[in-house]
Length: 103
Image (cartoon, rainbow, N blue to C red; front, top):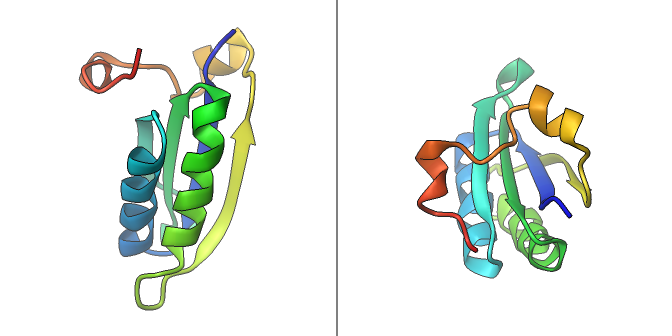
């Protein structure tokens, strides 16, 4: 079964940084994607077993609101992404993140 994907989108870099930090500390997840979305919003995605992604996302959602003017825009968990989603979207484990992957 493929690893779950958790995505958080915020309005500012401090918020997405706080969310990413909280997620990797709260669960055995690996950050696989970060980018600036439309309108300057920040997006971070993590992967790992669903049992680890859920608590990581909860911690990230809470942390995203803590920085001054921090605002969570949206979040979503994909529990079992099909192969075509992994192929098309930048959610796979790359060489640069493989060293941080939990096995």
